[in-house]
Image 1 (cartoon, rainbow, N blue to C red):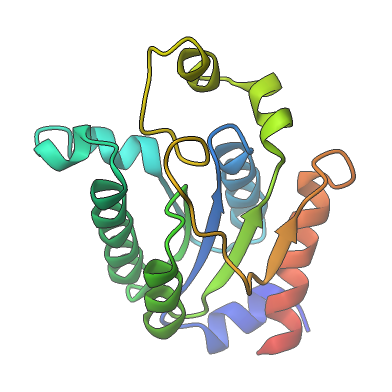
Image 2: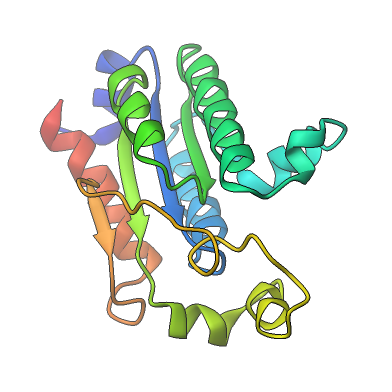
Length: 186
């Protein structure tokens, strides 16, 4: 059965695809590619990117603070916003670091059609990519509160899809996994 038929008939409350991983793992790139693919087959998608949402709430002191507690509060905001949008029938693709067990548990319990993708890319590769210069600034002592370096993270332990080898899989393969998951599990 085609994914679009399953979506329109059985996921009338929407779904949430949660993409997590450290800075530079490819979350934003994957979410954009996945969103384009789903829109092409008629699935109404909304992309929520952690950096973009944080900038929207930048007036709030918590959103300029990158401590673990602040990050946890922001991740909960992402989760709740995802729920609101999914409950209106959208496929919400949320790409955030948000690596906290409480968030994963809450998401699994409350978000409709929850599907978690963990981009578990090695730190050595992330340091090579470093699109925002975060790892370089950290190594120079110009930045603190970097998830995975001086901030402890809690990796997901039961993601629907975990990518550990960034060279062995591409976005088309990941998109295929997502579509197959929905078409076989509903």
